[in-house]
Amino acid sequence: MKYEDSYHLEDICETTVIYMAKTHNALYDSYVTGLLFIHLIAKRREISIRIVVYCILEKIHMLSDVIE
Image (cartoon, rainbow, N blue to C red):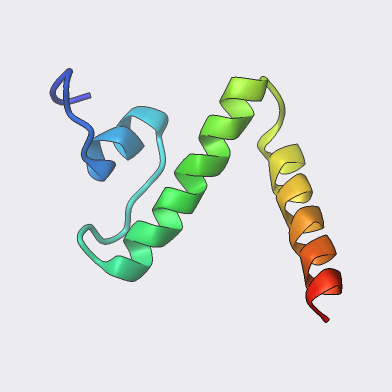
């Protein structure tokens, strides 16, 4: 990280090698935050990012069935 105590989204993404196309743009910031969240779950659980994404999509599908 640029600064050891920096928790700016741009700095965290730089550390985790997530590319930010535009900074300080709500759409891009939310998208990158989602990618970062998936990356952190995968790292914490020591599993593939694909598995995390699959589990998230499965939960969303289950929730959509309950809502309908």
